Image (cartoon, rainbow, N blue to C red; front, side):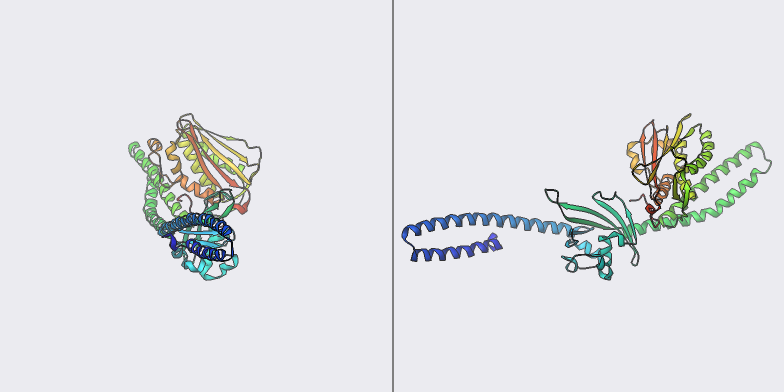
Amino acid sequence: MYARLPEMRLFWVFFVLVIGILVIDFIFLPQLWQLISLIALIGVGTLIFINSIRITKANFELRLEHNRLEIVLNSLRDGVIAYDEDFRVLMFNNAAEQIFEVKRAEVLNRIFTLDLAKDPRFRLISQVFFPSLAPVVVRRSNPGVFPQVMDISFENPNRELRTVTSRIIDTKGVVLGFVKVIGDRTREVELIRSKSEFIAIASHQLRAPLTAITWAFENLQKEKLPAGIQQIITNGSISAANLGKIVDDLLNVSKIEEGRFGYTFQQINLVDFINKILATAIEVAKAYKVNIYLTPPKEKEMVITADPEKLGGAITNILDNAIKYNIPNGQVVISLQRYPDRPYIAVSVKDSGIGIPAEDMDNLFTKFYRSEAVQKIDTSGTGLGLYIAKNIIMRHGGQIWAESVISRGTTVNFMLPTDPNLIPPKEIAYGEE
């Protein structure tokens, strides 16, 4: 098996040369030198033979491992591209061929540059190499931290890709190249859009009869009716209002996921803006016997670029949860501060409520999720408020996260940029990654 490999062929070439040298030695050298030459050649030949066997075996195992790796990579559903620091493609599996609609032979050993993006055959793959060229890019990881995770959206044809980029590093920590794993999420995103369209249609169909019911209750409340009947009408009116909020939330979610929620950005003073929201929230807090406070910030003006209506809705959703899932005579504390080394303002909403179990934290900002502890207190929620709030905050270029301790309360933190250049250029749905 080994003799067929190149290293063994070299050994046989060396063997023929040794025979030639021995023949010459026996013809022209004395017997003593013939013996010395023979012993030396035998020793060198033995070392070369042993070393050739070792190299041949190592190369054979390396080729075997390479073949195994290639079989594994070609069986993956995700595309895999390996390339060096010069963007020279070193590996390109079968799934990558299908995703980018190019043959392996066309890209292997090719160096990708910005100019190559002008070629229609290589436009898609070039935009994956250089995401700044792509129509829409959403980072799922912090810049400079590997692996880098990005969602890239394309048009004509419609394509949704998720790329995970990792570095290839040697034992000394030197970067040798990179590997991109590309997942085609087009069908998955289309299914989400279809589901959102269904929700939107169903919500619109509910709107008309719900409006009629609300109008009927409002008119009945104006009539002089017995106290028992009046209470039934009042309860019906409250239920209709709750149903109306659910329908509004469903419509908002469908608009968010279709990228048409609609934002109108303008400059606002975040301090005054939150004070106005708290003026309304205080009335709700009184009904739940909860005290609400704003820790005075050091600055009277913190100017950001935002959509007042959308951002107000996000903050109101966060405050409503902090109030509703609190304890009697509990409190909600809101604080604002500017990051000293980053162009962001941090906002925290801290409550003294029931807290959220650790196993529920990962699902806190996903659609329709409500923990068992929360459902025991209020069964009427939809689990959409924080999902909507997350999308609004991230559409403003911010981040949102939460910390909680059971029976000690929850703190919802979010940050908003003071630099308008950090606001994403296009709407996109977050939270289902």
